[in-house]
Every structure is written in C-alpha cells, then in structure tokens.
Image (tube, rainbow, N blue to C red; front, side):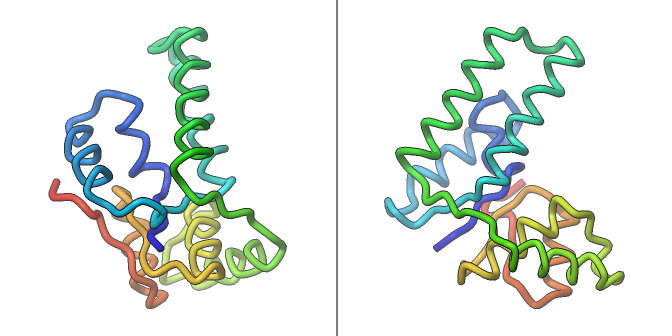
Length: 144
C-alpha cells in the first residue's frame, strides 16, 4: 500500500507544473493500492480554504474542488482513520528534533507507519527528509 500525502494529491485539483505527471503516475498504479488518511482530507480542505482567503479562488469553485477530492477519496482510495496511537507516535516523531518535523507531517508519517504502509509519496522535501531520518520510506514518486 502507498500513502499519498496532501502535497502529492493537490496538483490533481489545482493546475501546477507537476499536475500532468501526477495524473500519469496515478493512472499507472494498480487499483486498490493507494491510501490517504482523514487528516489528508482535512489538509486538502485547508489548502482550498486558504486559496479562498487569499481571493485566488471563489467559494463555489472551492466547494466543487473539495467535493471532487472527497469523491476521489471515497471511490478510489483507502481512507485511513487516525487513532490515539497515531497521535502518540506523531508526538514522539516531533520530539525527535533531528527530523525537524512539524505536527501535520508527523501525523502523516505516524498514520502511514502504524497502518503498515510500504511507502509515502509526497512533494514535500521536509517530509521526505524527516521520514528518512525515522527510517521510513518516503519519496517524490515523480520526476520534478
């Protein structure tokens, strides 16, 4: 199972330089092998809300994007539910100061780790750095 963090999925819903590469990658992955967490859903909604606050996106479009993300999650991805053990592990990961982790990324890594995920795909170099420090497999998944 592959865990996709928010940064990896966001380009599917907003035009970014890597959007086509993300689409191509996901089209080639066998069905049933991709996972996100409830936390990913929250973070995606937060990204879209930020765009609304910055007035780069109107509310009607924003709601449609969130609905499209939720539909993808519901129909194409395994959605992992965070439990107390995930928060406890995220706490421990943040306290490993060499990782330079902040809470949101620590929670992604903890959820993936506790659910036996084989690797994390992200466009976040900080998350990749931290995961490697923790001996957890994380990579970009696409050439940048």
